[in-house]
Length: 120
Image (cartoon, rainbow, N blue to C red; front, side, top):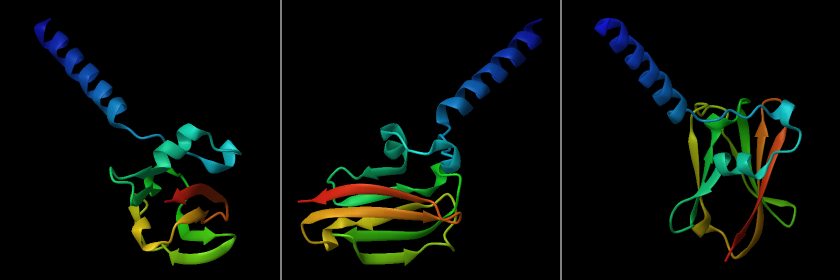
């Protein structure tokens, strides 16, 4: 009986730990419009706010291109096809002038995820 209880507790704890540490995976074709909670999992800033992190791992599709646009024109475009799907991409915002920018992620299925940011 003690061994059965012990096994049950171990299984329960490992299941709880696995669920608590898992990230959501966002399936773009099912979502249509992403919610603010989705953006919080994909895009986040460092403490100072000068680096934008983009977590590729939470998006089911593979990210192929990261574009930075200002006033609708591309100021940076990077092919990221060769990066692993679990990459956390870092975009150094200190290299950009003040203004409003759009970060655009293009997937292998040609869907796009866009995020508006302001650099002060």
